[in-house]
Image 1 (cartoon, rainbow, N blue to C red):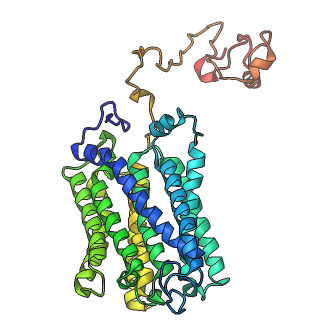
Image 2: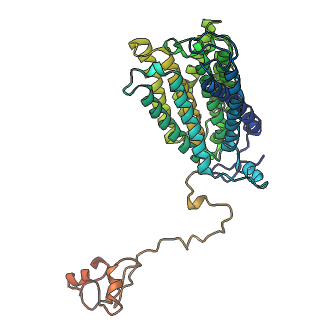
Image 3: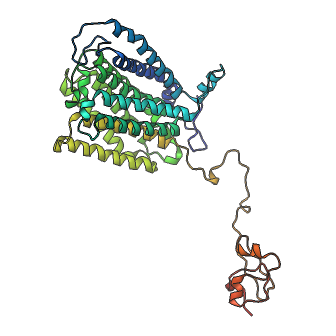
Length: 440
């Protein structure tokens, strides 16, 4: 693996990050397979007759098993899942991998097209989630249609722009799939869950039905949590750059907190809420506490953290505290809304961490050490203004002092400013202030 240069003359050497980045390609394949399977469930649900395409009774109809028309949609759902998988392979591939594929005569994909494709997938997830939980948005003006358009547009445009800016970073491309796997697994569960209006209880209700819907939710959150924990060193790799001045133990503390969040998310999926409510809630609270530690102690990881990340950290922490207060004290919304807010903040913060710390710093001339010939300091020295001796016949005009003199031509005698001051007998190029020459 090539060493990374993150704004420093020397490469960053990090054994844990190297292992995490080397395993990113294999992890991306696992995540893409999980996302494609979840979309296959969704496509089968959308194409099935009366919601029985997978042998379940999602719409309250009698469960009469497989019907001919229902079974016929399964190949179409499989093709849709394969199309999603191929699209994600292009979206998350490295430039080297795409260049290797292009040698076989396949069409190329530029950064803009890949960013748009990523945004379209996220917009589709938002639209379908609102569709499958449409009664939950009945209170909004315009109903669930307006909610779907709003959420789909915001999420699609935001993720497309982010993907366009951070696509060159392997840690981001992999973690983008981690976030998408959690969302797609939940979407698959929403589409076929027999739990009814699960949003009136809590988000974890999706994992309590002991069927394919519960498996989609629980397996998705377990793989996403373990993936987050495994990618912790890669996500924090750039903090080792000299420009951030990492504190002693700061990067290690950040990685531990990320691992706590990931392991806690996996615990939420491994222990459904109907199996052991207390232990399930302990895992959920541990994930929230781990994120609070990340956001609240962001300045403790490095002395010069990016200002954007610091600002977002405190804003996100305030949103989490405010959402908890609104849920537990004011009762403005239920636990489902709070869980969605908490999950969104965690993944958004980690993506922001990668996007801000891996961004190339603004290069100053003094930082161009590699490939630059030594330059004499005299060449860049600012010339001092010379004071003309008394009785001097001419004063040298520094470059750019009097723009009007260029239009007067070489025959002009002095500047208008000196003429107004009554200075005569000066050279045409003299436009220094009168303090620098005696007036006779």
